[in-house]
Amino acid sequence: MGKTALITGINGQDGSYLAEFLINKGYTVWGILKRNSVAENQTFRIDHLRNTPQLQLEYADLLDMASLVRVLQKSKAEEIYNLAAQSHVRISFDQPIYTAQSTGIGTLNLLEAVRLICPEAKFYQASSSEMFGNNIDADGFQRENTPMNPVSPYGCAKVFAYNICRNYRNSYNLFISNGILFNHESPRRGSNFVTNKVAKEAARIKLGLSDKLVLGNTQATRDWGHAKDYVEAMWMMLQHDKADDFVCATGVSHSVQYLVDYCFKIVDLDPAQYVSSAARYMRPEELHDLKGDSSKMRSTLNWQPAYTFESMMEEMVHYWLDFYTK
Ligand code: NAP
Ligand code: G4F
Image 1 (cartoon, protein in one colour):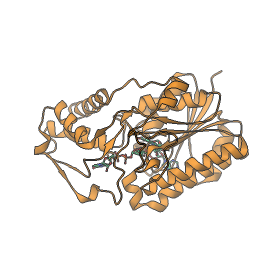
Image 2 (cartoon, rainbow, N blue to C red; image 1 turned 90 degrees about the horizontal axis):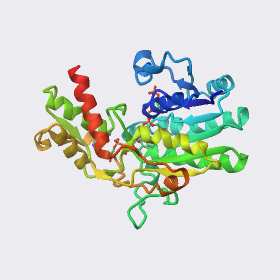
Image 3 (cartoon, rainbow, N blue to C red; image 1 turned 120 degrees about the vertical axis):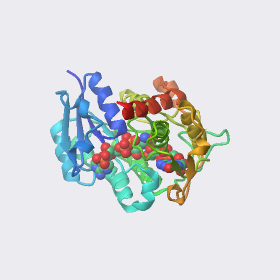
């Protein structure tokens, strides 16, 4: 019989790919949804999986520990992937307290429920390169032992979650692994994150549906990989014989300006005619540069990404071109 997994954040970008990946491996997958007034909007990323008997959805919320207890008891999950979070960095400056509660304390609620109900389960925590802030090692990379110095409420909340996971691992001998994932994208990315915003608007401008793209800081650099490659990394971490922390990244970074130029090249347009910047997309404190060294992950778990930045951005721009011409 296949294993059973529970995914928090199953209807998010990563949760939807992870659910597909685990179902294809023969898992029964339980996922939690937090209540939304328009149910259809919430499940669009997983609607294609709704009829599979291997998928079970339950209403629950990281802020409501009783609901987590209920789902853990019902699902009897052997692997738990904690992907739920208020995950938008810019919005975390507008809603710092909610972000700290959901992304930080929400993780502790789930850990405490796991400790009491199913301490034998393996636990994956969605940690983030945003935790490093502007600390960079001398060779230009961030890695597992790079000091953490977060520069956003979201980053601060993720550092708390990362540390409490390590504390629970050491204190209670639980199998808890942190995946310190660098930015990962896809056509399922929220369109208020920069890659999908640029891909979508480049397509809309090409089709005559829009005539401008307004951005914030285009000098920042990010190490962008594909979400499909990164959900496989999450699973690999829980198949390892020892709980540990791993950086997952491509090791290649580009600026937001390069991203813009690349997407507009795909649609054969000159970005200078359409792109401007506005203060509302700037952050009170910016994380300037991210580039990850995932040697530990690659050598220990044999992980290797299939996508490049270029193949991923081609997929995203073509997704939107198809979407608007169907
Ligand atoms: P996402 O698309 O924003 O998905 C977040 C998910 O969390 C959504 O399903 C959301 O549900 C759910 N959620 C939010 N608050 C919740 C709560 N209080 N209780 C239950 N569910 C809640 O994020 P993602 O890109 O898939 O990322 C997955 C995880 O990895 C997040 O923890 C993120 O912080 C982390 N991470 C992401 C990246 C990246 O580049 N994508 C990199 C490093 C780490 P609704 O949609 O219904 O609100
Ligand atoms: O796409 P972004 O919003 O992603 P950011 O802030 O790097 O956060 C993402 O990656 C983290 C991993 O490091 C995750 F933990 C987090 O959950 C999230 O998935 O912004 C990328 C860069 C930033 O420097 C931002 O200032 O793009 C810059 N940017 C420029 N104009 C913009 C825009 N970002 C957004 N969202 N929108 C703009 O118009």
